[in-house]
Image (cartoon, rainbow, N blue to C red; front, side, top):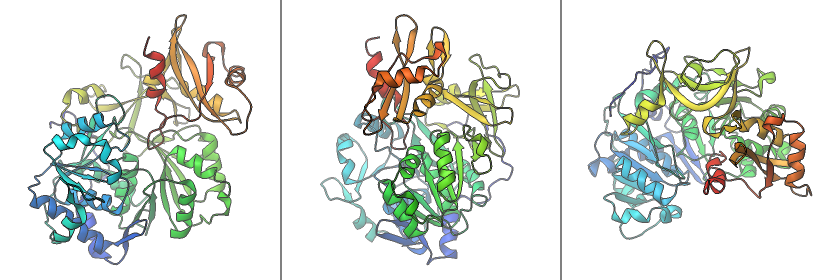
Length: 520
């Protein structure tokens, strides 16, 4: 595909690609553990050998540079092998969302033209259509007609490093942005972008014998941005097949975990474990949070009770704008997502594409050396995603609204598409959600816009209440509206048992809105 823009020049250009660095790490400390998942523990030597086997079994079947290799599986040691083995063979790893519908998955596989899919038994029902596709099928943990067995193939594969040369513009991974409804967009990262991101390895301690716990799926960029630096740093990746808050704490204590990448909903569940304070978490040095804003009250609780530095990232899978909040250093800025990371430029623009004055809300656009190659096969969509400044430099549109405070910290307002326009006034759902969440009887909340004859649309609150409370939605609504201006008040509050979330904890507002707008 054509590169239709040029990313910013990094402060220090990368000298080694990730494939080569992993190869070097295996030679440097072969007996050190590389991957731990459940009962599986692989040393760097063992991991490197299995990476070679993956690469060779793919090459023996005719894999060509940039061919897409799909995986549909929970986190596992095999997943890590396939991920790195595909790259060593010169292929492009395409991790598929286990939250996607069968229709969406069919569109993804058709769009990318994957030559092979590695499939776990628990997700076979999601891809019934592959029987009619020209795609190699490898079963990770089952035997069935039409599928090759993973371990049988691995046992027969050559362990010699194929030494396929890697170029900076070679395709690294393809991550699809839509896994539930709509037409998926493939976000393509090349080896240059991923290598540029390795500038965080030394500052974040990934090279200091880190033991990184990853409990979000490997198909998510949230996970990958901690997975890759840990391997690049020659450290140890610990994978959880399925997240459980108490089990997470048990593993941190048992394995003496030093680093953890978590999303906000996981932090809340971890901090709510009744005997949280009884666990020995003293080994933890760095905790990261991303994918959605971490509430200020949860950040404060983490700072008070969870050892180690708390670093919050705001950014996009596509790249471009990234901010960082070192929460320990700025306890008065917990309502923000920090300042632009080194080498990142962020601007705020209005609907006409003009920069907004200091302190005003605008759409967040960002530019850096870490930017996707584009939406796969869709230069038209890539072009729409770009905003250019007076110099013609490309910035990526985030779709998020925010403002900078007087100290240069970014305060998020809402997703642009989630902003409610009621009676011609802009209402940011996030502001109303914070009011609802401040109620001690509310454990989860979302605010959406629903049709209104009088106002066009009006804000509706959807809440989950703490167990044992006798309060009603009407009571919650009345209490919240006493703290809101007349033009921003909630029209109603409905009580739900649970709010739908993606596998990395984002509330699926599109699903929440759909029933109200179907007849509008």
